[in-house]
Amino acid sequence: MTEQIVKTAPLGKRRWGRVVLIVSLALNLIVVGLVAGAFFGGHKQGLQPALGVRNYVAAMTKTQRHEFLRNSDHGMMDHLKVVKILNHGQSGILNAIEAETFDAQVLLQAMKDQRAQLSTVTHGFHKELAKALAGMSQAERKSYVERYKNRGKNRWGRRHDKQQQKN
Image (tube, helix red, strand yellow):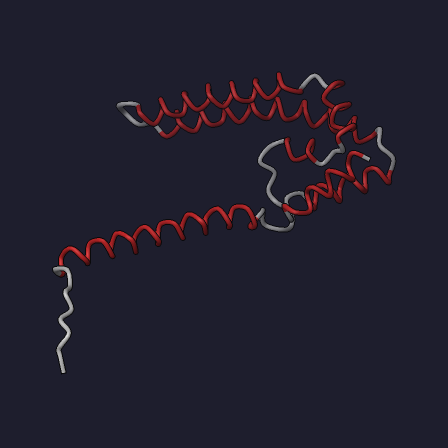
C-alpha cells in the first residue's frame, strides 16, 4: 500500500486565522443578541416610575394630545425650560463637587435649588393636566388610565394601540 502524505500548514499560520474567525463570530452573535433583545424586549411590564411628564401626555389620544399642547402654556417651551434648569443646576452641582475645599452643604444647596426650580415647572404642568382631565368624561378618563398602564408593554401591540388612538 502506498502511504498518502498529507501536507498541512505550519501550526502557527492555521491557528491565528481560526482564532480570528471564532472571535469575529462571537462578536457578531453578541451584536445580534443585543439588537434582538432591544427589539423584542420592550419595557418592563406594570407601572413604571414616571421620569417626567412625558408619560402623562403620551397616554392621551393623538387628538387629545394636540388639543392639550395647543391650549397649554407648557408645550415645547416648557421642555426647553426644563433642559435649561437641568443644565444650570448641573453646572452648579459640578462646581460644588469640583471645589478645592469640598463642602457637602454647598452641594446639597445646589441640588435643592435645582429641585425647587423643577418643582415649579412640574406644578404648572400638573395644574394644566388636571384641567385637561377634568374636561374628559369618565369613560375617556378610564381609557386614559388603561393606555397609561399599558404603555410600553409590548412593542408589537403599539402599532395596534396607535391605530385605535387615531379612531
